[in-house]
Each structure stands twice: as C-alpha cells, then as structure tokens.
Length: 317
Ligand code: XMP
Image (cartoon, rainbow, N blue to C red; front, side, top):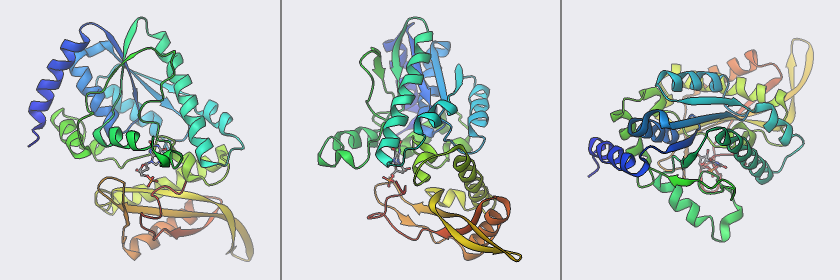
C-alpha cells in the first residue's frame, strides 16, 4: 500500500544523506517524471540541483517557453537551451525512424553534455526513470532491440563520468502522479499525456523540415485544445496528430488543391504496452476536422486512426 507522503519524507531524507553538498544536474523534458524527480530533489538539495531543459525544435507549439516559465515559477534552478536549429539541421533529409531517434538521442547528449560541463564540479546526474522504464530497458536488450530504441534509460557517453541518482525508479506512473500531487505540482502538469522523447519527428512521416514541423504543431494544437475544451483530454491516455507523406486532391471554390493529409490518433491505455483507439464523438471529430482544415494552411484532409495496439503502435514510426 503506497503512501505518497511517507515516500516523499523518506526519499528527501535519503537524498540529503546521499548527495550532501554535491551538485546534481538533471534534464527536464516537460513530462511528469522528470518534473516530479526535479521537485523532489529540489526539496532535498535546493539550488544544488541544476536543471537543463532542451528545446529540440520538436516539442508541441509554444511549449518550450510556456513549460520553461512554469518551471521557473516553481522555483527550480533551470536553464532553457534552445537547440531547435541544431536538431533540425542534423535531421535534414532523414526519413528512417530509427535513424531519426538515434540522431536526436546523440544531439541531445551533446547539447546536454556541453551544458553540464559549464556547471563547475557537478558530481551527479539525476534522471526521472520510473519502474516501467527499468523493465523496458532490460527487455530491449533482447532480440527485439531494434524495434525501438527508447533513450530514457542509459545511453550516457563514457566521458560523462557522473554518478546516477534516480529517485523514482521503484515507482509506477500513477504513484509518480500521486507523489507529484503531494509535492504541490500543478494538476494540469501532472495530468499531461505522455509525449515521446523524439517528439514530433516520429509523427512526421518521411523527412523533416521546419515547415512540416510548423504545420504539425498547428494541427496538434487545434486537436489538443479541442480535446481540452470538450472535456475529453483527461479521458484519453495519449493523443496527437501525424503528418502523412502524401498529398491529396481537394477543392476550394473553383480551384483544385493538392495538399497535405493529417491523421489524428487518440488512445486509451494503462501503460502504453497495449492500447485501444478512443471512440471520440463524431461531433467532436467533425468540429476538429473543420477547424484544422480552415485554420492550418497546407492541409486539406483529416483522417482518424482506428487501429489498436497490437499491432499498430501508438506512434506511427
Ligand atoms: P509505441 O509507439 O511503441 O509507444 O506504441 C508507446 C509509448 O512510448 C512512447 N514512445 C517513445 N518515448 N522515446 C520515448 O521517450 C521513443 O523513442 C518513443 N517511441 C514511442 C509513445 O509516445 C507511447 O507513449
């Protein structure tokens, strides 16, 4: 029987004991796990926790700035690093999903490493690893290693000789959320849908360009804002939009158009291992489809993904 209050009390004491006056660096992602880990560590060691929040240029629309502001508002010692151009330059011309993931993983480590070197005498790397990540990173060493290389766990270059501290590694997601609530973290932040580390890159099928990122950010925003205003966001485990690498014919007045197609995906799940597509109301889908086509230039068709996992993974890549 898990009690978040007791966990916080014990973990803060344990972290104080373990870390003493050492400096700790942590990468914030905007997600629940890294945020809860940061607030917990902040309670234990205060300003000796140095947080780094990297913009890989593949986050949701406006999220780099809004999430950074939110972190600062929470009193965290956080530095925002806008490396969007660097990521997008390295990704130019790349269509293969695994290659995209590897490039993003590598560039992230390069950026993070450069930033953590600036912090004098840092001893520890903190991570928001939770129990399912621990399990999954063990299983991906098996024959299915090439299915998807999740880079939440491990993957540290040798030259980053930091000791690792992972205060959430025994917790499940719902327990992390309860710990976050105990710590007074904004419920909206704690209720955020999971979002993959490689971000929108694996929702842009084919090669990635700044224009495509912008189109997908705009489409995604209409969809997610719609889910929120219709009271559907919290009923869905994860949702997002996918930009397809095909054009389709449409009509606008007397003109024939030949523009992009987007797919919307919303799933119910408990752990992401299996997932069912959500039966979103037709009225909602109709409204969102109209809004996307009216508001986002370059898109003339919206489709809804009615596939469950297995076999269809949540992400299209
Ligand atoms: P799939 O697509 O495998 O996704 O059904 C299951 C969950 O994992 C997320 N996901 C990732 N997260 N790096 C991440 O950090 C990745 O490369 C990655 N690929 C998928 C996905 O968003 C879903 O929540």
